[in-house]
Image (cartoon, rainbow, N blue to C red; front, side):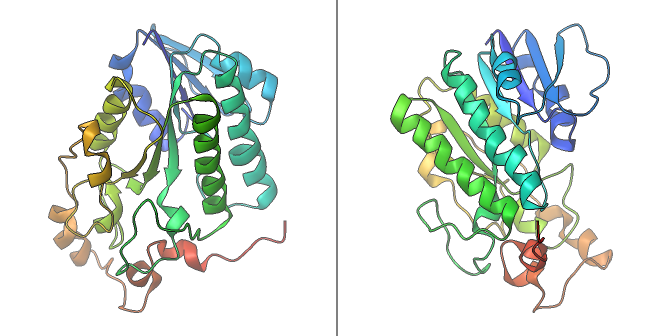
Length: 264
């Protein structure tokens, strides 16, 4: 790649990606709606509202790949989720369609299946059971990605990210944690394979408590090396161990299943 676009570059995951994906292309184009600081020599900074179709089209021009981390990443009112995660994503795919269809790493979420119990076997063919409007927006995003692939051949890795942080900090993350190193290695594989298609991938490290399997995408050659297991004792000792009937223990979506619905 000559130019890699990272949307949502001012967010927690975006800031990490800005530092850790620099080797993938001579130029990184970084986008968000909030300040991203001064660009490095290899960076282009573009302030862009994803709900602005014309601006998104300009944003995608000249890019050979897209790591789409932009949009709303928490439960919000429907109007906010609509603009950022639904209208904004459609704008991104239309921009890709008109600009050579660069391969896309789409950050979906485990919250598309949040209302499954933790003791239920869930795979990519399981019906979606989103635990909030944020999760609903990611269901839309996954459907949109498949539509553009089936209709036009647009390649996308649909990555259902678990909990991507520097380290796991609570009980649920012992199952859902995706380390920064494993995130980077997954992005590398998504853009390295000769043919990607439109696979759904669970974005999770090699945690013994993990609820999901990536056997169906073993051909991608991604092998996460980290595990949340060594953090269990520290989490127990910190008092971050919920009661057996707590949503963090019973449901895959954890606390998201308990969030109240906004009237907006």
